[in-house]
Length: 411
Image 1 (cartoon, rainbow, N blue to C red):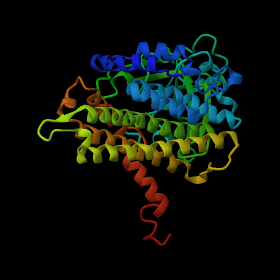
Image 2 (image 1 turned 45 degrees about the vertical axis):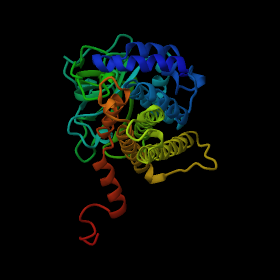
Image 3 (image 1 turned 135 degrees about the horizontal axis):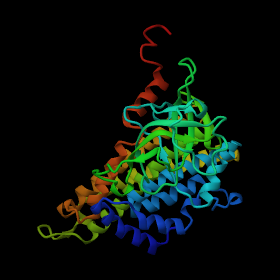
């Protein structure tokens, strides 16, 4: 999937994309040619038939060459990975996603909203049934109108951090159904195509992960015919197979990307230590006890992340296929905790590892010409991906202690 020669080309372009703050068009073309968009599509549907665990390993490898390219491609893999999980669980509504991906159509993921801390489990975006929407709603794509009168919706709202913004063919979004009463709030997940009702802003100019071009997306009565509605769920955490698949794939593949960055940082730090020499002490830095400790701490953290990610991806594969065996675990009511916990630990370990390597490698790597300098900026984007530290800790505290105030009230 990712031979060394291709990775070398991708790594060389990564510095250019970062410097020019532009999208990774050439990387996308090369990955598309190699079947990357079909990675998680079952073979019987025209794909490569990879497992989620295999996708995680491939993504670590890609991230070590071009973090922003890997992060953006993650969004396609989150959608197709969630569809794969739901397909394995017998949910027919996701089959069109897998069939489109088998035709090399690129999926993006429009879920994040400013101020929406519930993320996947609620939405400020409004979903309104097509037969209730104003007549000025956006035009449904040609040939996709079949469900417009029965179960289709239009979405209105603003999505942020929409990776792959310049290039996606399909956009998965969610919204709160306007017609439902507050006692029974409902979310709708659907697939959008590019129409005039879906507007992408050119507003991506960030500290790191610049090539992902994760721009803001404005939905102005964007049409989603019935056949493009994926699922409806209650507001709040739930075991819908597509939603569980999205949450799991997002958290674990995000963790894989940042772990790939850290692996590359350790590799670079090792190379620097083996060739850098102290004039004062007359030794190579590989013999400096402080350098050795820093690189060892970085490598220990990275190895721990790899094991956790691989384990939980294998568990999620087993949950989908029902073929659990020795070494796999069904986490029951703790799936969401496990997903978010691994993401939190892995991204924090990646940031810590990159920082250790920078401290061990000298001031030359404060220069924008250094790959380590770029990795240090890219790694920090992990702070902002859900689930963030605050929400992870709040979830664990709730699991351990119950709701705030419950103990004191005698409940």
